[in-house]
Image 1 (tube, helix red, strand yellow):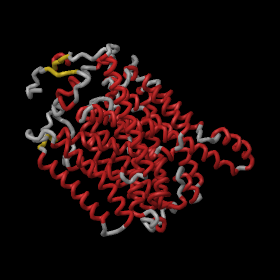
Image 2: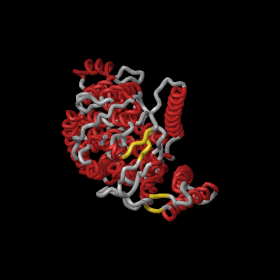
Image 3: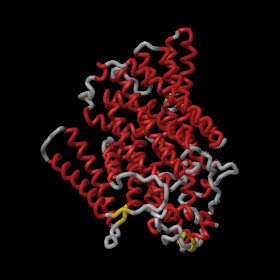
Length: 574
């Protein structure tokens, strides 16, 4: 595209990759982003823009803070980090903030439904976007399922706590047989999942009032719980700060698990297609969400481990059981009921993003056109029914313990892709070495992951010499060197979109985010690593098989091939 914005032809075929476009010219980007939708039989219906800054922040905070405090804080404190749980949240918060600033820029640059999927498509190509989409599905469907399952477990635990009343013991026992039939089935998870889907089927406009109301109530409840816990905190419960059986590796492992609680601002990006004035409101909403949730996580975790010895903290119901431990049954009842009321709305706002992701993929021809169908009120009914059914099945049949690591690793991969996309937009290769930036970035990510594994091994052994130490130092030096080469050999690209929020210290800040994300992935157990590798591998294999099938059908004349047409910016405006 020329600097003076003259109409020039742009190829609009299914083989066109974003690297053939000038992704730096974001003034022109939005003018042609959807011009080839009808090549795939997709309706050009647009989502309605009706979400204000306050709505976006409520969605971000509502999807994030409840799952983090209610679901994983007690688990991390009891099994991984002890009193140092707040350090785990701080490390995760640093990585989230580094990636969050990248999301803030890309959310304003590409304000359409799809989040990381869109950023990957526009900077790395279709295959990378499929990997991003598979990880986002883990975030949205997986985490909504996990929160619904956790809610169902909390209902069972709450009902079980009523068995102490002998007058009602028989009735409670009968109710428990219904709520906990065994074989891993959780009827309460089914109820809350299907209820969230039914509410969303009435439309996001109708759901956002409910979301805003309960997000406000949820934050109020969390402030009460954290404040009372801090008031009850005892210094002896914080000692030793790092229990010997957990060590530094336990803190890092806790930071990896805590990424389950950092999905809110990514969800904001996925619903950007419905945001009012997205170029301004998206970055603001992301930054405000990060500040609010990180502060709440750290404060609440300090309060919980200060109030109760970490050995006594419940893995599934930390604050209610903690208040009971301190003989504050009234506070325990408030906390337990608050969890039961708040978590269903975490499910609601989390699954809200998945149909938007499917919508973006359908418009690009990766998913069937049915996922892009918008009703007269701007609702994605078909996509919501399909993703809602999947969420409900997973929540009903799979326990939360099997979902945490898989979801957290998916979030970390999505963060990494977004960080990398900012570097690809803001930096460029020298003219005589056009592939330098891409090669350096790929090598940096590989070196970061290897460094993560070596650092894990070195820290767990505690040795200051030997082969592992030498390899760790060499790998870390290689990683730093690759970052230095990107900084000095790949020039900055001047952004052309006025008023766009820009991530500071590019490429240093995104590179730091990439390193932390991949380092945390390396802390997963072998089972978690195999699960995420297998999941992504199956997703890519399914995509390649589907693409090959489409190509063969076109060759045989069974499917209409998208036309190789040229569209000018002037045509796109019409």
